[in-house]
Amino acid sequence: MRPEFKTRLLQAAKTFGTPLYAYDWQTIATQLERLQTAFGTAKIFYAMKANPNVGILKRLNTLGVGFEAVSGGELERAVLAGATGRQIVMNGPGKLNADYIRAKEIGARIILDNADEAPRAAKYAAGAETLIRVNPGLQVSTHDHLATGNASSKFGVSLADVPTAVQNAERAGLNVIGLQMHIGSSIEDPNDYALALERMAGLAKQIGARQVFDMGGGFGLQFDLAPLATLGHQAAHAFGASELWIEPGRWLVAESGVMLTEVLERKRTARAFAVVDSGMSELLRPMLYSAVHPVENLSSTRANTIVDIAGAACESGDILARDVQLADPQPSDILCISVAGAYGSSMSSHYLTRPRPTEVLLENQQWVVLRRRDTIEEILRNELE
Ligand code: LLP
Image: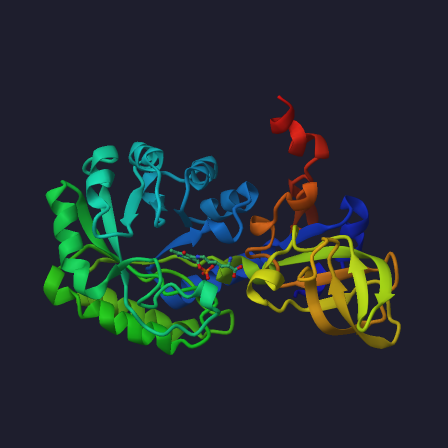
């Protein structure tokens, strides 16, 4: 975390209230530069599911970044951000008819996830430019929920079925401009890409030259991107592809964001807890993936102690962090839960009729409100009409 950002957080918590998502634009810009330096000419389609805030998308759009969208709502976000057809790629294993129609209308490219998807895609997006998502069928080094490139996952077309998928799409009148893969998220071992890309490149002799090769996202935050980029360009080269595409989500935004939360209570059962004003409704990743997010106490220089950070939900699993060592948290202290810029706010919910947090961005040393907290009235509105 940049020190210049960190020193502004207590003030942000005071000004905007907690729980609060705070992002640092400088960190996003730096991550983008690192990506561009490593991947050179590759086209970036930011997987907006990581953080779809329109304010962030608009800023990325002005820097030439395209978007990967997986729902009708995400398509509209891309449009709102200023992206035009070719800057958008529509993906997902279960697209609605309306999604094909809207994607075609916008001029977005469509990724087919299934060898049998072509007739429906062609019916609603006749003549569209498409890619086929390939499942390279490997053991992927990440949490089970986040592995998509293993043979038994629901994603993509198995290697052996790719020629049929291409044929089906072309017979339906779709233009197959290339292949796509996405082996998973938070990948730990870069060798997974090496293996997947090698398998992908092996398809070139069966399906022939194509314009695009899309290697997906999933890059672990600790990766050295340069060797990965070389492998990607090599795979693209195998298809004679003039375009390498990448779809990073987490890489761009994870480290830019923190969630600030206030300590409400200290308590002790057989374990010691700090109970805070957020929880699984605001940050689901610890509960869903056993994700570990660093936690610090911004308010205190008291001696360190070890506690669990407990959410406010009536669920035993609602623990934001276990066995955290931090300055002894006391009521009204502000805790900072970091590396929360990706899949934090985007996966927050109204569970327990809790308003989703405000989101703010530090840009040119100023806080910009990107999303204000919901009101309870807004949450209830659709039930009362
Ligand atoms: N491309 C495709 C087709 C994807 O499905 C995803 C993420 C990405 C790109 C971006 O992956 P990234 O670079 O962000 O790892 N909710 C989970 C992550 C789910 C990722 C889903 N797909 C989490 O909180 O870790």
